Image (tube, rainbow, N blue to C red; front, side, top):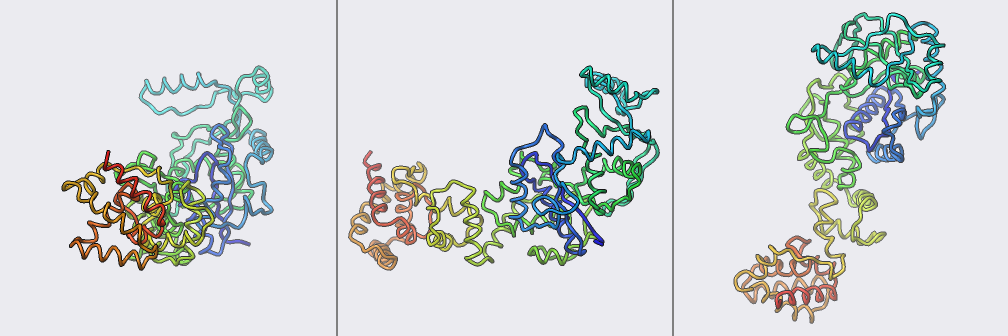
Length: 485
């Protein structure tokens, strides 16, 4: 027997949100620390919001993060299917059980009628709670309504007694009976609601420890009542605190990208993402912040989850990523760089491993892989695609009666006659600076503007050798032509 069995159950309505990734990570850490099992279930009953390809994307991003699971989607097991849209017969059977036991009933209100009831409640300054009719419809009436094309849902008959939920993070949470409604468990289209499908699947799949976001805590009383109705044991719960932005608002796209794929495409390492996400609502109990995934598996403790909302500090994430890059060896960075390039359109040559290694070397100190593109990408575009930054031209080339133009023109002749090796170029530039009493910046920056259109590139010697002699001279000529116009 498995002592702990938890699950991650995403809905394929879009990309993997960082909050969902945190849930998946904590489920994974709990299972690994306790010697239990993690199940991956796809909850796709919300057909209106279903996004094709989302399941594959979620699975891919989980694997990118290093999160694995023991049962479910992509792995298999003896409790499947693990996709809810393939389990409709199971849900229908359980709804029938509740109807037969008198614990559920059909309801026929239209959307307009329900809206009217809500408006009445609002006018009377009270919360709207659906109340069951004095006389419950029969199955025969339900069939007649369906035949007429009118909506017929199934609602659970709430006992109306206080429900107490014990949560590992928030303690005992009690929902008074007078705040409970007869909630829908089967929609008019025959699909189950989240509450019914979720409870049935957790029970039949043997899930006994549920870790999920705090926003679900207010729904848990419904799940307890359903389990009681079926005679199923209650699992343990751990609801995670909300993730907020730095202004104390719930994390959303207004503050930037909030899904794992976006950070992956932006050039972050999964090691940094996992480390950062683990600290959103969990504390190891000391001042330590840097963890590998394996170290997190050892250190994780459900008792160290926090009640207070977590802050998504993007500067801290960037600092974690910078440190992770600095600590990684070149082989690891190469694999991650190739993954980044597979997700982005860049001017870098595909499949040129030697060149990618060189780019990692000459851009040492980069914070994300996107920095390599911004710093070196212009060296790989067509010469006539280089766009000159007006401020850079003015500040570096035209200022002081065109000192930069003069340096560039003089260098053009010298570079044309120079052997194209790093040693020879370094010697030429050094002697040029000494001979004219100029600092390297007064020489390197005019070259950078001519070669890249701006003032940022790798070290000037590396820039010249990466670009090659022909392209270097061509770009200098094009820039000098700009001076004449």
